[in-house]
Length: 482
Image 1 (cartoon, rainbow, N blue to C red):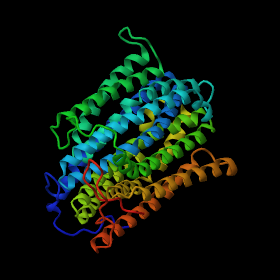
Image 2 (cartoon, rainbow, N blue to C red; image 1 turned 120 degrees about the vertical axis):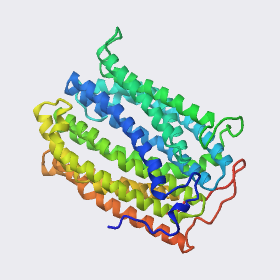
Image 3 (tube, rainbow, N blue to C red; image 1 turned 90 degrees about the vertical axis):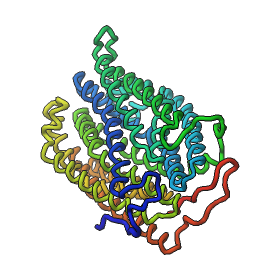
Image 4 (cartoon, one colour; image 1 turned 180 degrees about the vertical axis):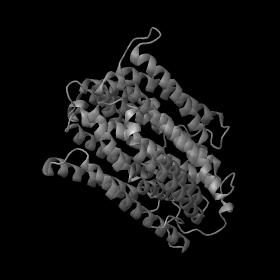
């Protein structure tokens, strides 16, 4: 399958601030984003490594909590993705006033979203373990972890929203540096609070939750400072545009709700997959959790290049040069394939060593090695899924990735249930569904994006129709339809 979208014009003629070669622009956004996501992922991995010393029940309890958190983060994408796309389009159009106003509105609506999220978190923390079918000794661990992390939803929401706004403006380094500080703080506090060192109480698995919450709070403060200081492209300093604006909210959520629904539905699919693994015993659940931790690391290059593609395609939309966004997607796809191909080979060969890091018992290690080697084969397909889904979001088409990606994951979940419940296979066999679906999802997204770029170049795209401006903000291009 080809990996490059149609491209014309000089890639060095990018209509974005600080334009250089196309490859340099892609990497300039991608590598800090990869590093940032690595640091975010390490929060969960460090916590899992530390609580692993407390036994399989602790691994399973914290792992189930992290799976729920992935679902929550999907909801947050309703604000962060939409804001990032709109800010990128404003920057591409060289309209800094609109970018600043949109950044303020993103912070406002993010804070408003955090209130019901915190309340809901407190209400569902206790019954979540029972809904997931966790063992009696595992469910209280999950409930305690969720009560702490969801109770601090304000920091979680604003961390993602502020980071998305900065990336949309072309600044991927500030979110990376904020997460570096948060990660160092989380690792230190988790070690101290889990085991009770330096006179601190030994909180067990809940100690890792308090450490993660503290790290996110510090990262949020740093990101807000970056936005207020205005030393990057976008700035939220000043009194204007802070009142909640329904017109802007509609724009943000029109783009963001499908993206948020995609992540939420996909995360819920992975959660149901976790429930299926839990039904096979605590050992299989622990093996699944370790494999998913390794999988989250494998996804990082793809996620980084996908987010970079979203920003660059969004800027090209604002500048009315979408063919350059298509060229950026092609560069990102080739490099994502290379990176995830290397990760795939590493995981396949080094599966025993990776599992040994978590000090599992022999049953967990044997199942985890098989799971990891199967999922390694799906990585090239996932590379293209990330890049071309991100490219479609940059065009404003967040609905197509929702249908394809969420639908693909749920087909895997459904087939897994059939294999486990009706065919009576072991817990490892369902993982082959990811290997089958990844190239299908990638092919559909690539085809949709290349056709959209070709249609725009022929003058038949929807990007030239500009809606009426909102009361306080200038207009921006409407989203491309499915």
